[in-house]
Image (tube, rainbow, N blue to C red; front, side):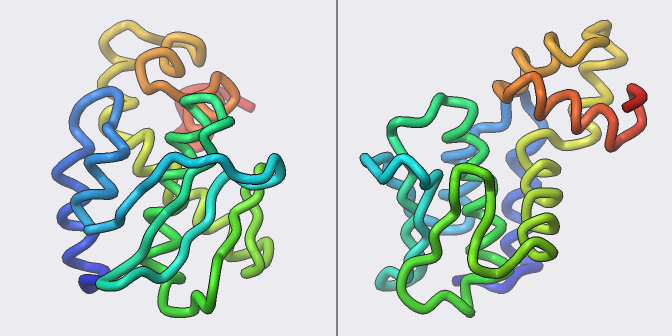
Length: 157
């Protein structure tokens, strides 16, 4: 896999339109993604693959959860991929074997990829000033949109 700086530079080229096309983001860093049946408790599995990594996404998840799983998979591949031995399982509550501190950091970065602050602020300034509208435009859950709006200070918790 490419170095982290180059990967984030490639990712940034895909963050200016709503919704962010997560499959394009994954392709930009040469992360292969397959949508497959997985056990109920999993969102995704990241595994080493010849030439990089393969991200398996649970086909039984809603579209917004699949997009979230791809965003987390991108971050996990970049920041934690070197530590993957076998399969790295990302559960439906966004937890891995790396523990809560790493999981929280991965989620925070993934949120910035799937809902980039400049894009969210532009939509907000354009008149879409509620979590429901932002969730629809960004193709994320309303809960995720609300969390992002709170994180960047556009609404109060």
